[in-house]
Length: 592
Image (tube, rainbow, N blue to C red):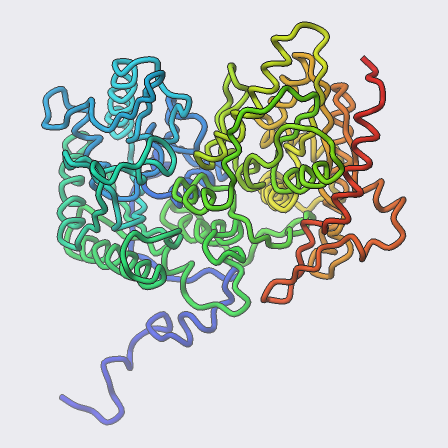
């Protein structure tokens, strides 16, 4: 019966209207209410996470908040429940179920690349990047990872599966790969590998099969689907990447919604919507408009706390550590697909070089320093190896033989190989070693300060006074152990190491002034640590501010489209000044 003024929306609540349900919510500060209908009915659930790079955000947050997160005992370099890294399509996960079966149609010797010396697992391109001694040992490691997967699923209450892509690569035997062979590991051969874009029906069918496999191992397991909000780095289709990305994410979102609405095997959590809903002065993406900020991850996971029975918060946890200004580099998550973009930026510098006493390695600052030294006619080896985000986000594996193995791209590994060969030649030449290393490993301030602020706010839930040197040292021990251990090994074996701070320009630009004091304190704390170990440290910030009277003539003149300046780097004049200062240190007699 019709009544005047009544519509089907008349009795609906505020959450059904865009203005009251979305537009009136202060994103980043207020929590959306009634955002999901998930009811686990489990106290302190044991949680596993799998899928695209966003799945690592989930694991990090769960660990930090004290939840029971299942961490792989085989893969310890990443925050991962399973020992096969990022999986962007359901088909790749199904292959690991086949790997776990003693009798299956999957040929366990497929997807292996050999350079005649070592064997590399293309199904896990970032795992054991230095390769295996034999094909048999590689296969044994695969089976061990698959076995651990089954054991982990058996003790998992909640599995969070983050769907990442529809695009994939397969070989002539119909084996699917987590990334295109040749991007991270192996060599691309178009006679062997071809592009494949999964359809709606294929992905839905694969997820339904995954549910069957999971329930066979653990009938009580709860499966929560999410869709990664991280856009494609590149597309192999003929479409514009923006169009291809929207197609991929829309397909995955539609499948997840269908499965969650039509059966009892799946629930859906809207992390994708929280990140992609329009927001004025958006805080959720870095300036590259692709990497999700730590603040955005925390905002999503605060909503997820309601799934786990945690009381919802209405305001952000604020503390005395100020937020770091955004940078156009990627955040701390380990994302294999970003190697594509890095490959275009890094130069292949693998040609043989004569033995040199001065070696450089680090990020873009060290690359610019290398250019200035070359302009001065100073013979040296090395320069930039990875982006600063690569070092800060630990896109490397520690290695006893080579100190570390870069994982950002194939080119980064080639660049490091040249540097390592020079260092190794010195080590073989006898004692004392006549070698000086200049590096900024452990700096990467544009990333490290943000990571420190996140760590500080999670460590100290009650308001604190000023940040102390001890706070920084505690952070170094927790988040920078791997980076600092590389420098210590080089120092202990006999190389003379000089660690150089990042430039001083944060205090000269309005958008970075608020964190300038924190950045300078970071350098002071790092200087204190290295002095304790007898490692040289050049605080370029202090020396510059004390000596240079016209700092504006040394700052970068790059201004981004949003009006912010490149406070992270200096201009060519700054790096020439830095090269001159460092060479004065290099030419001083060693104190050893």
